[in-house]
Each structure stands twice: as structure tokens, then as C-alpha cells.
Image 1: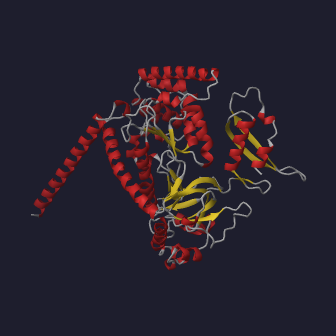
Image 2: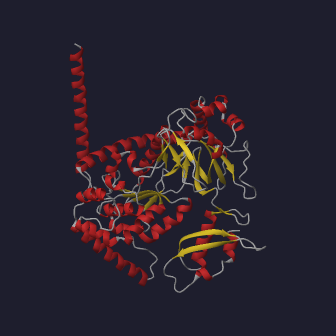
Image 3: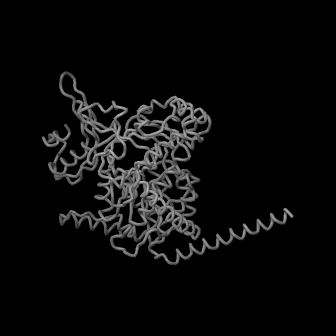
Length: 569
């Protein structure tokens, strides 16, 4: 009897599964036959079309739900943010940290501000050491997914234990809203028939980091997207799975460029930050002949430094594409002619190499906010022109999701009230901002538009009233949630004489000087403090990379203008 019931149940389950597979396959096939050919990646197989069609469907539904929830949270952001704080107190009250700091006694945000100190990373070192050694229930109740290593942009690298819940929040409240923004915002300047989501693939510039491991086998390294996070998602990208085994950045960028060039219907190029997108185009430009030859012959360059087993598998699936190679050669010739014409006619507009290579490329996903602005400007000026959108979707760090950008044309972020608990400390240029009055932090409804604030967070990783180093500028409110621009990282100052000039201020002054006073374009720069012997004032040594067409001007021999001296203090 039991065996008969089990057989019937198994048969019913099998029937349901078979029906689901048939329905989903029919849906994917319908997507395929109804999608214009120029919106279907040349790298696709029927299996990857099936996967992308269902992924698009799932993410479309998830994105719609996420944006509705986000809008609801923003309309009641004050209460939502405080409710999140109290939820975090309850979640971690029985951890070692929670017991030591009596989190169970916190009953309101004012109570929290009064009872818990402002913290920096040093405050948690003893607890992080215990997590590193394998102790459970130290900073949060779950077993850590990994120990994240910060980028170190404001000082030395720091270790932060990361719970599994953080990844879920990042996906459902961050990535899902990004998808919704793209779904509602992607437009092609000339191909008005292009609709997204479709079956275009993306060139995603990511790599597999070199991780270390704790004595208890917890992974330690960067907390950013990587190929092995979800191998199924690799079907959405032009670069094949085996290529991600290459650990050398230049060689991997070469392979990214190769497989991107092979797909004339490319839709996206993605990276965390704009400087990596720029590096991608530089590698593509400098290795053009090798890339085209590899496409034409189906063989990788002999001097490409990759392991033999990786080379063999890649070449096994690298079919020669003579027609695409000839097309690329013609594109290059036409592009060079266009550059000459622009120069001869003193035309300010720069022809877009990217638009010629990929006519239906519509979006570049990468942060160009804050100090990455210079790379976004160079990217437009040298490679992509003005009609390809550069979308900065998320404001995030090793510590977790902070803000979202629901407008693909926008450059600011709405602080998500249900991602972290936020406090703010006003930036006062006349005071030492290393000292913060613990009871004078502001809550999300107390910011003034136009003013800058240090962000202090309480998050899912067990950090409380934590100064992680970011300074933001409030540019408005979305309902009750602050809208901010990332101004700079604390520690990114020029401070030879106590003037505390931020990198943003310095960059704007230098860029203005190069353009208006030197008549040149600033391409890149770096500067260091230089102290002289005796009683002479300290100064800065500045190294600049300027536009190549300098007309005999030697700007490095010029003294800085009074305007710039005033601008940088």
C-alpha cells in the first residue's frame, strides 16, 4: 500500500515537473522567435536562450516587486529604518557581541544613540579574531559565508565577517531594483525597436580572486561578484566559463575583448567601476590586430600567457569567423578616417568606436561617481561617445548595500531604508572630524540639502554605529529617504598644511585649470605631499597626463594659477 502511494506520488511529481519543463521551453522558444535577430547574441545556444529567457522572466517579476516594496519603504522611511534597527538588535542580542553590549536593552533609535558608542574597525578586532578562529555566534548568529576584505581606499585593508543574509538583501533589494530600472529605462538612440529585456548578452569584466582560508575553512577575500558565485549566470555573458580561470588581469581582459568583439549584438558592458571599463577599451585598442586575427583564424595568439589546458579548451570552441573579422577591419578603417575628419574640421564631437563595433550596445553598467568621474569622462571622450548610457546602479561596499539608483540616467543614490540603519555626522571643515560627538549624530530625516555628512552605519554584519569612511552630499529626498551623491572617502585628503582638501575638490580645480588655463584635457593625475627642509612650507608634487595634442605647450613648466591655488586652499 505504502509502496503504491509512493509510486503514484512520484509519478504525479514527475508529471508536474515534465509539464513545467515543457511550458518553460515553450515560453523560451516563443521569446526566441519573437525577438529581432539583432537583439539575439551570436554566442547563444538553445540551452543558453532557454536560461536567459527564464532568468529575464524571473528577474522582471522580482524587480517589479522590489521597486514596489522600495517605494513603500521610502514613503515611511523614518519608521522603516528604526524598525530595521530594532530587528537587528533582536537578531544579535544573544551573540557574544550582543551580550557584551546589552543589545537586548535597546528599545528605540534614541536609546541606541545614547547607549552604544560610535565605533571604528579597531573596536571589533577581538571579535573578528574569534570569528577567524572558527567560533560561532560571535557577531551574528549565522555561520559566516566568508570574511570580506575591504579595498583599503581609505587606509589599510580590513576584515569584515559576512553573513549569508547580506547576499540575499543585496540581491533582492539591490540587483532586483537595478533590473527594474533597466527594464523601464533602456532606450537605444536610433534603434527604437530595441526593447529590454531581450536576448542580448553582456560582457562582464569580473575575475576570480585569489582567496585565503581561515583555520576553520572560511573563505577570506573581496566581497564582490565573481564567476563561481553562480555558474548558471555565466550563460548571460559573452566570455565563456573556462576563460574566467585565467588569473592575469591583462590576459583576461584580452579574452573579454575577444569574445565581446565576436558578438556584434552585444548589449551591455559591466564592471564595478569605470576605470575597469576604460582598461578594457585600452586593451582592445592596443591589441586590435591580434584580436581580429584570433577571430579570423580561430586561434589564440601564441604569446598570450595562459595555461595550456585553458588554451586548448578555449580554442576547441573558438570557431573562425572570417566575415566578422573583415567587418571589424572595415570598422577600424572607417573609424580612423572619422578621427582624421574630426581633426581637420576642428569638430568637437568624438566618433564612437563602441557604437561602430556594437550597433545595439545600449548600456555600460559601472560606477562613475565620486573619484571615478574622471574615468567616465575619458571613456566617453576616447571610446564610447555621448549616446551610450553609463549607469551607476548601486552604492555598496564590503559592509553591504547602502543605496540604489532607480533611474539609469541619474548619478545619485537613494539610501535604502530597509538595507542598513543610518546615522550622519555633519562635516565641519573648521573642526577635526576624527572626533565625533556620539549623541549628536543625525537621523535620516534631519539632513539638509547641499550639505555633506559622514555616514555611520549599523548593518547585517554585526557592525554598530560604524564609521566606514564615506562622506556623502545630500541632494534631496525621495519621499522620506535621503538622496545622496558620494563625495569622497575619509583619508583621501591632501593635508600637508592642515587644509584637508578632498580629492573631489582637488580634481575639479585641476580639471578646470587644465581646460581653461592650459587649453588641454586632463587624462589622469596623481599627487603626493612633499616636505622641504628648513622652515619652508610643505608643497605637493603633481604628476599629470594630458591630451596628446599639446601644440608645443609645456604645462608642467607653468606655475599654477591663482584661481587654482585658491581652490585648493
